[in-house]
Picture (cartoon, rainbow, N blue to C red):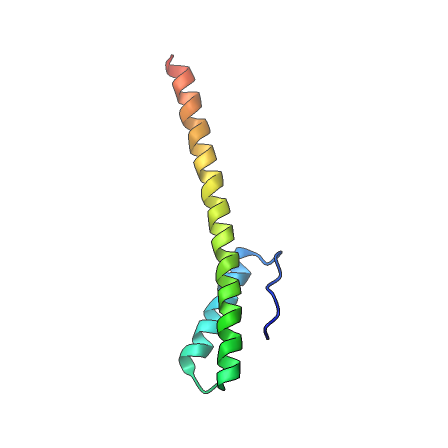
Length: 76
């Protein structure tokens, strides 16, 4: 279970799997080795989610900057 996360994983799929990993860790009943593997998987999934969110933020910032630029040209 220590395999790398598929980089093509969608935000929603990574988020849903991360929720399941957290649920399993919180429930307990796993061995130390299983818990460590789950933790590592969760870290990788969190990175995927973070990359998606950072990309979305960059796109939003670019769209807002473009809108402000167009509004500035219209007001000139």
